[in-house]
Amino acid sequence: MSYTLFISDLHLEEENPKLTTVFLDFLKNHAGKTESLYILGDLFEVWIGDDDDTPFNQLIISALRAFSKSGSRLYFLPGNRDFLIGKKFCERAGCKLLSDPSMIELYGKPILLTHGDSLCTQDKKHMAFRKKTRNFFFKKFILFKSLKKRRELAKRIRQISKNHTQKSQDYLMDVTFSEIPVLLDKYHLATLIHGHTHRPSIEYFRHHSQWACRIVLSDWDKEAHALRYDRSNKYLMEFP
Image 1 (cartoon, rainbow, N blue to C red):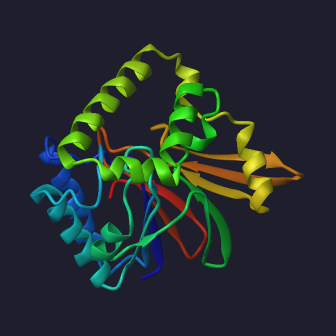
Image 2: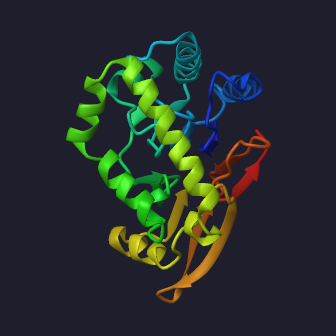
């Protein structure tokens, strides 16, 4: 096992069985082969709580658990769609829950991970929503509601989000680039990996007289992609 994988923004849902099959095959193909898999948020289209024990959710959790039992390590960093994922989910799936952002060391190289929506500072409405949903007491308030109420709330939020995305200018949906060096400086790092924007890229730029790197993970809307990082310190965005 000499490589590590990163994915994000799959937006899995029961209504899209084809995507689910692709993801399950992805897990089977890499189980026991990759050293680690990092999921950087929005694995699900929506997650209303670890107590939402639907057959679909059980299917995904079982597949993740089988992957983690194969010897490959599994890490999960919540996104804006699945911010309610908690310890119970991670225990059942066999994954470690990461905070946002998180610093890791990969083959001797320090790397910063984040979902990415915290960098979209020009989208004031989303930033306000993010601040609310990352509040401990707000999450407790939501989880206190019945599953039925949470499903209704999630449906309304998804529609509001869809309307906001359609009406917003393109630049609002992207990262504010000036936030990247600020974040890297805060953690004294030169490599950042994130998702959220659905605009995959591997970018190098000069920062403090040295090269820094930002890697944006792909969504799985049209086809599946994973970032593969191996011991030779090479990055490759590939079809899994």
